[in-house]
Image 1: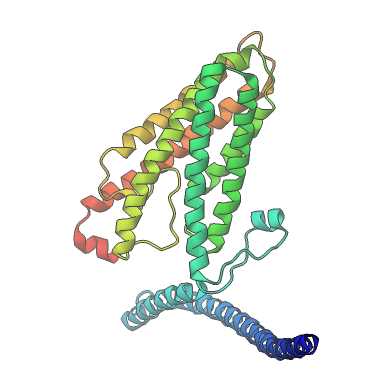
Image 2 (image 1 turned 180 degrees about the horizontal axis):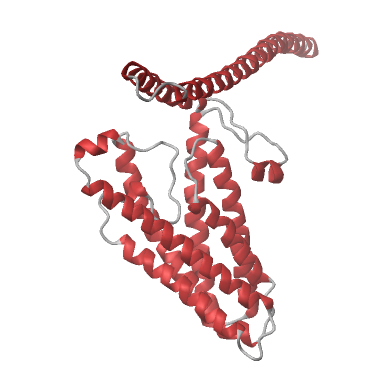
Length: 342
């Protein structure tokens, strides 16, 4: 009797499971249909945006052919040009919810894998993971440098160099993904991460010897300072971004990156001297390495190449930061009426 009841229960369970599976198949069909429609709508939007951009470019070229002396044509050109700029801003807003084509670097590294997040929440989550990643690895680097200064083992040096290569290489990939998803990182501060990756790679293949031993302590002191400076920059920039995002003056996908940026100007009180001290340290490294390259016992190519890289970092960082400061000082001195026309 009990065996018969268990069979009945088993039949009911299987029948219920079959009903659930039938529902699953129907749901999956609906899902496939929705994905197909979603992809079609997505491609249609991208196609129409490309068409809009092309036509806007053609209209802009047509405006250049209008007379620059006829008052009516001048007014017409100014009116249409203003509408074109407004239209481009609106298109940029639309593009934020659509997939973007990865740059050449990501296409080489990831072989064309789509890294554009449609969901805004996933974008924010990746951005926060990027910030936490930098802080955690910077803390690990600081610990390894402290151990290296105390024990002076080449094995610890090797761990540090490999960690720096992996860290900077990983940051180049993460920052490229952030750019695809709406971050506005660009210019020198984007390029400098690649230069640091090359620099760290050179130190890996720098053989042990007199030149390495002479520069070793200075190199560790430099990275200790730049790591501490990165902590200082992070907390300062986070505060700036929080205030500016609350006021609607910064993009939600903006992140903290090394260097000085125009949006950091408000409330700036102490960061610039520390940045310039770091740049002077880079120049001092370049000078030290150049002098070592002239040493009669120096036969390592890594010495002069590292000197050149540190000098490039010094020039690029100093020039970029100085240009931003000059720009902000100029804007501050300009009359309000002139600022509105920019």
